[in-house]
Image (cartoon, rainbow over all chains, first blue to last red):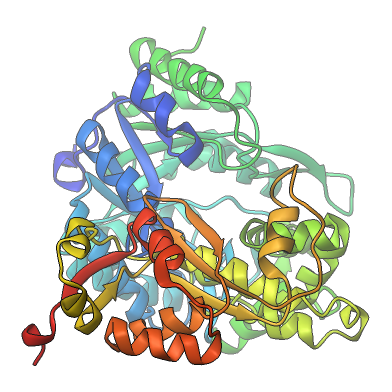
Amino acid sequence: MLDTARLNRLPAAPGVGFKPQHFAAIMEDAGPVRWLEVHAENYMGDGGRPLAQLRALAERFAISVHGVGLSIGGAQPLDKDHLARLAKLVGWLNPASFSEHLAWSSHGNTYLNDLLPLPYTNATLTRVAEHIDTVQSTLGRPMLLENPSSYLAFAESTWSEPEFLAELARRTGCGLLLDVNNVFISSVNLGFTPKGYLDAFPLSRVAEIHVGGHDHDADDHGAALLIDSHARPVAPPVWDLLADVLARTGPCPILVEWDNDVPDWPTLRDEACRAEHALQTGAVG
Amino acid sequence: MTAGTGNFANAVLHPDAALPAGLTDGNGQPAGRRFNVLRNNVASSLGEALRTGFPVITKLLGTENMKAIAAMYLRAHPPRSPVLSAFGTDLPEFLAGLPQLSHLGYLPDIARLELALRASYHAADAPALDPSRLTELSPQDLTEATLSFTPSLRLMRSRWPIHAIWLRNTQDDAPKPEAAPQDVLITRREFDPTPHLLPPGGADWIAAVSNGKSLGDALDIAKAAAPDFDPASTLAILLRGNALTSLTLKDQRP
């Protein structure tokens, strides 16, 4: 087993994605939540409420800084200005963990605000590994890389996604963030089995797990198409998959993501309680 | 992959663009409308960011109109940075250039006011000046002193009644706006930016003080613009808003 303590300092307990409207309620009663995730790009201003809230939260909770805008999977070099903003945030906050996505979001100087897919080839492998090296050397710490949710595949891909992630982790020393909801979504959308994906996934490098809600749609042929909406409770098959994963990895930090149609705090806290139950029993009753 | 990424990015942003080649459903069939999930994610998340950043513009236009304008805007001026608190800075000029909105001449200035409120919200914090520093000075020293403002302070001058329009669309009991130029000072006492209506001459006085003029010289400039100007009410707005950070006496200046 890899020394995941080196990769992050998050507790093997439930965390949630922090929403500013929950600030007072979380400070009052966090339930089982022991750590919070914030999106890096929301805390790159010069001052005001966002930074004040983050400073206050960091006194009570372990913080995971989760980037959504580095475009690590992009074809072009990383944005130096953005990397500098990230280094500044990570520098003063000294979070328990920093993570980003196997995806791209910028082309030229246009930022598309979505986690877009890339083909898995030897060329993209080399480039993404260079980008991860750059991030890790700039931040002076190892990062975690998250598996994406997929709606389509590239005919030119020569690597499977779990093998691509395993090779990236081997080359760069980064840890992996396993989003169980994304595995389930991609398995339905691209027609593979979650078990096969997990069998090929380097679980020893997993330092954090995500769960979240998804929506249902269909493609041109009427095939089920799941949408990674983060707009509802975690679906039962995703809780089941989480239990399967925990049985293999042992206790792990688990984040509940709910980013759209954000509910009141007690509803999100209840989801965190289910994650805690999964951690304690390896199953969700 | 660079050219491929360019095609992909263009197709994500433009619904009428041809789909990139080589995309499948994972089982060898063409990806088809699956690509629209990505288009929808981009358009809806950026549209929502604009509506969140411009709530009064959204209310004035109506949500459906704002969605249509956002769809045009994000193709003309897509974000240049992953920090979306900076997204929308070109919206005032974009609105000014839309012929179908030319009868709503005040919209660009309302958009500028909302951008100024957002900039104030994210501006750096700074410790406020103790108000007794002002009251303990002799009239002569006060006249010769200069003041520094907090980074969250914003001044905006308009030929439209922007303060009245903003109030009317954010507070239930606000009166109907009447045509008049209005100057607005945004202060952020703690975390929430607040727009204040300035009296005639107030903006001239603030601008002069901001440029390093002594309080006496700034008063002369303001009175040239508005002979009846009395700085007391404007100074009170600044003090209540924790907007002053330092006071420098004449003999302390280099």
